[in-house]
Image (cartoon, rainbow, N blue to C red; front, side, top):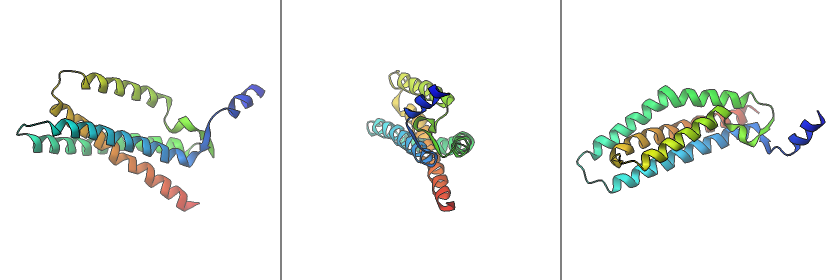
Length: 150
């Protein structure tokens, strides 16, 4: 018991409500980064399918948001809200999510360095980046409503 208290003393902890802001900022930042990759790839694209690529990416973003990222964000928000007053700084994501992030980052690096045409890859990046961007506001909204209740 005494050892746990010593370890907890070195755990970087913050108010649990700020974990919502931290998670939202991460999702927002990664979403912007992915869309930025797609933007730069499409700047160099001279094909006739630009509108089709953009519309496909936006539709994919909406579908990813509605059918995957929204559920994932809500589950994560509930997990964060269930924490006590103070929580570890790194607990804005579950350990399973950290593993998923590592896998997704690895896949992104592999895809970016593959021979896949960047205009096709940009559809996926707009889809995932847009979904992360849109879903990030769920975290901010929950933080806002949590602060109003207090």
